[in-house]
Amino acid sequence: MREIIGTLDSDQIYTTGKTVIAEAIDQAIEQLYQRYIQVDDVLIRKIILPDIVAKAIQFKIEQKHLVEAHTFIVQKEEKEAQRKKVEALGIKTKNMIIMESLKEKQILQWEGIQATLQLAESENAKILIIGDKDGLPVIFNSSQ
Image (tube, rainbow, N blue to C red; front, side):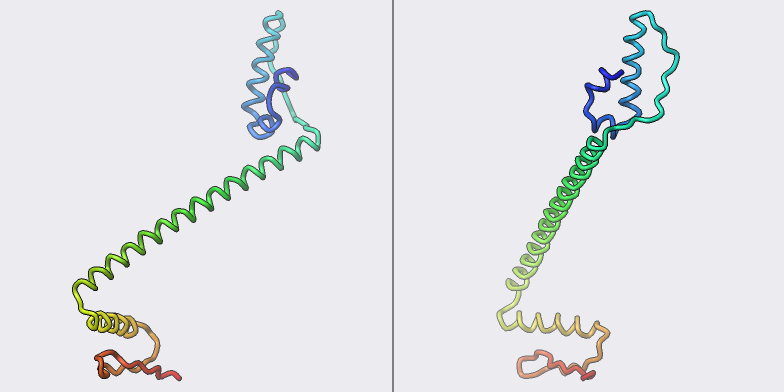
């Protein structure tokens, strides 16, 4: 049994538990059976690893999870960067379409209208006077 378990990595024994140990027991029973010894059952109540080995295994597992977490964070940030790039391309396309269809002065009026609509939909108190010399809104905040 020691020979078989000795060939395994300590973290395999510690992390996979019953499966690895069951396989080792089966191999040990088979070796005994070849020597005409019949084993009906084997009961293992506890596996005690030396403290230094247990701590090393625990440290290795923690480091593995940290690496996985960092990998996940990097992947998440890469997807966010890709999302922002797609968003920026959409805004650029929108702006190009608007610029093609409007003259320079009309672009400012268009943006003024869009800003006025957004402001009108907000819940803040305000006073809007539409139509100064360029046709853009003059906005006063009534709460001040």
